[in-house]
Image 1: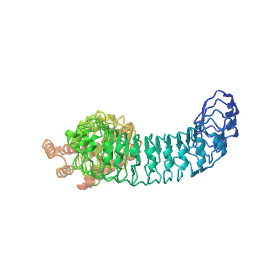
Image 2 (image 1 turned 30 degrees about the horizontal axis):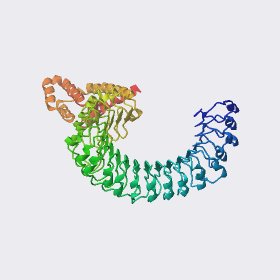
Image 3 (image 1 turned 90 degrees about the vertical axis):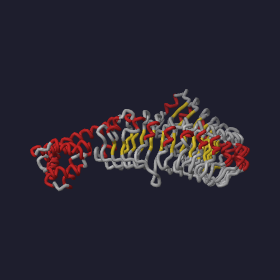
Image 4 (image 1 turned 180 degrees about the vertical axis):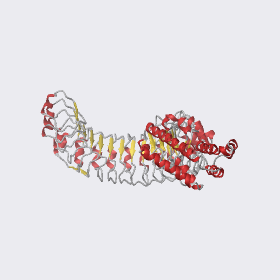
Length: 606
């Protein structure tokens, strides 16, 4: 009965005497009918996402209730009736407005609770005595997103605690007594004000995950050196410069996040973490990465973005399981030679944006299983004027991203050789034109995302609607006139194509009418000057002049020159441009005649 805008439960609810699980989440309840608790078979009650402030007195009759979800309501205290639920194992009161939890003798009844969730309240105090009745049962305690400035010493009484979450609080230190929680597997204390770890934590021999991101840690002691069970360590957004050598014993480490710190090189102890799968060192001060990184044979993901690396060791190419490599915004001038790079046989993601390459690193073509290539350049970097032809050899590529370059045209080459390409991102280039050949290429017609914002496009090609699978089109910040931005913003390829075809058909008709008006309005010298302004091939202009060299054939020569201009310029050959050129060469009378005809046509249409 979830998500039904229910405001009230009728008394007939008590007739459901075999009801076990009842979900009333995301309705509009302001109270719970007390008759509900006469159903003694009820074990799970979910009323999250309502407007409750209290519970009925008869709730304490729910002797079999084991799971109660009151999250995302309007409670500012824990109702005493809940404290009578002796069989309760899971209590969720997250995302309410509870500020304090004071001791109540009825709390001694909560001796069966396995999980307590108080996330997302305004909690700034809870009595340490609350933890006493929970000491033999509580396994999961969630205090995330509150305003606590400390954890009580009595946390150490929770002998069976396995998971502790206190992310996004104001906690300044971890109590020594946490060492008595020897069954702890997960500790999440991200986004607090912790500056050190108690040495007693070395007794947490079952700890698998420790998260301490966004704290004030600058010196990391060897407290964790003996914790060989540790598999995931997150220390991002601190002020750490190094890790103790003793952490070489953490040979079971699989995930190490040291991003947004002050490391100048990968800590030596990390080279002993032979089971490491994910290594994140982005946004540090790394200037050197030792060749020993090649001994971390199980690495699948390395993030080295936003450092000052000038070279990648060729030994990194020994990482045969590496799938994700991100080294954007460093000072790399080259990549390892192709004979090394091709050993990264399963690499699927490569980001080399914002480096100091003088040209596109051609050895990337050897990464035949690459699915996503990111090569965004910025103001300080050498920009590409066209997509590199080496892309054509990446037959498994699905996503190509070349933002902030100087690419001026999108053509069928090299993208037409990519049978799996789905998304193309060319934002903030200098693209003036998308060729019709691009739209006609069979492989291109499979793309789903085309992002071109911040370019110089004025028109879309005639066959743009061949991109029938396109789901997301971004043309913001382009001076697009055909079709108008309102049509482009809607992103419907069929509508865009239909509009273009109608507009081109209309333009052709207007252009042919303009040609007819012009054929008798020019002498041969004016025509020769017009051909020069059209920038037509001299060879073809001369051929037309020879073919129609008689005086009486001048009007045929005029039409031939005009049609050649139309042929050479395609969609860019339109009436407005013709009028503009006529004004430039001084044929104002002819220009005004065509403009008057254009205005008349628009009036008649209206």
